Image 1 (cartoon, one colour):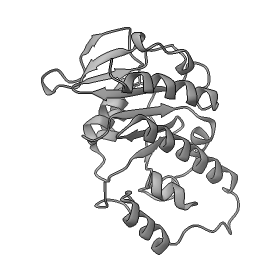
Image 2 (image 1 turned 60 degrees about the vertical axis):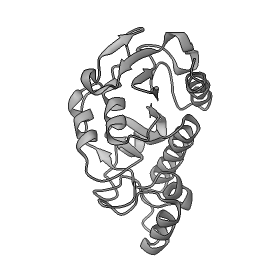
Image 3 (image 1 turned 90 degrees about the vertical axis):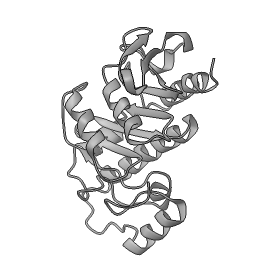
Image 4 (image 1 turned 180 degrees about the horizontal axis):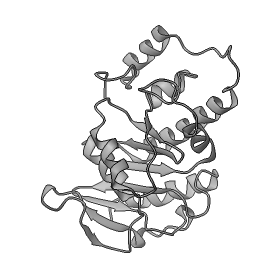
Length: 222
């Protein structure tokens, strides 16, 4: 068994223990070669078993076809979209965490990022985080919207829904999901404070360039 699969199980339990995956909400996946291993529908992320993951093809000739395992999370099209966007992505995490859901109900800060540059760590670890227009959970149209976005991003807020992030490994995906949640918490806390200081364009741009994170809309670093 690939080491990333036990890592996914451990990470899912960690995110649940942090309160970021209440009930049976949220889902996570890893890419191993041409196969996506994803959490099944209706199962708490804190109660996963490595043997009970659903496996879906990422091979070009049968992209998105379930290979075996239980029924996958209904959000699996979102995971497929994130892998299609980024060949280096090996883990995708989607959470209905409280702060990110709350932030996803607010107007986006800009057209290219729902969340402003409140801390250097957000810009360094995640970068621009667009707001994806609302669609019912599991609606393939939302996955299509994610896939077709021209701007680079590592994470996004799904309107009135939650967050999704991708990363080249499980630990980085967890770190990005936590960073999106904490920045969302700050965004909601400070929403009514007009004098909130953000990082300046120069400050955020310097961090993004130094750490290779996407910032500033289309055409920035992936």
